[in-house]
Image (cartoon, rainbow, N blue to C red; front, top):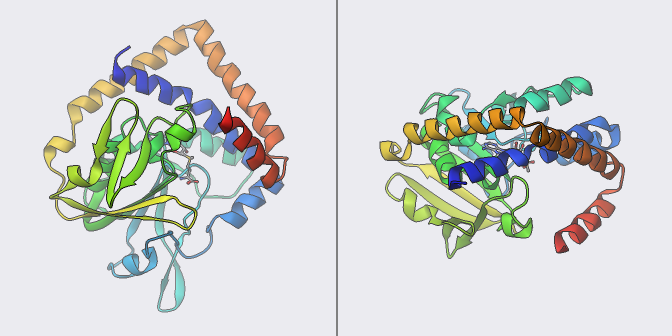
Length: 300
Ligand SMILES: C[S@@+](CC[C@H](N)C(=O)[O-])C[C@H]1O[C@@H](n2cnc3c(N)ncnc32)[C@H](O)[C@@H]1O
């Protein structure tokens, strides 16, 4: 299997777990309320290690914000304080699993904003260039099949002076043993942002030098934050339309092969129902019990 095909196939294998997790978080009122208490939905925007409020308030008009790889957490807050009053933010929730997530909202009758379809590696195909002030990506870049391309695509849709905010658990793929969506590790080396796995290692700070600046820090919980500021246009060599077409054709071909292969189609359905059952039970447990179980699983 070539590398691209391999990473896309593994990415597609991660879908059943993700959908089952959110389906069961939204199914139960207790877990849905727990999520709402934890998220900043309904409050002013809040990002750890970055004053998003001050940054957006410095922009004229109603700045556009994208929460890419949003899942169903609505984590960031959707208001901006101006003249001491909260104003609704022009925030768009974007995820490749948007169709499944919107079905979950409808199925469980939850009144939350609908999610827009988009993939970080191809973001400029979904949103016009130079149109966005802030792109937020939390615990999602390391889930994508091509994270470096994802960063360049986020920079492409940003206006000059716009910011890409990244927040991720350090070296998550290592912790999760490269299972499901977890294919890349994100960490800092000194002050540089680095993305790596067993096959590749990229110094993002060095790669973006000349058109974007990178400032890294850690949150109180030890998560890696990177604020990447667009200084000038992304060089055309970084927006690789031909490679995109190649990847997209691979995806279509894998999907067709999956649908035509009864054993594989059955395995995918089975994976979804297995995770759905596990998550159905897990979401009924207390947060502490779930964390204990998760820690035990991670050790094995
Ligand atoms: C762990 S969830 C994070 C959700 C949310 N950002 C948060 O922090 O609570 C990871 C999300 O990344 C999304 N994702 C996976 N691959 C992606 C890609 N290529 N582009 C954008 N999002 C992706 C998944 O569908 C999933 O919803």
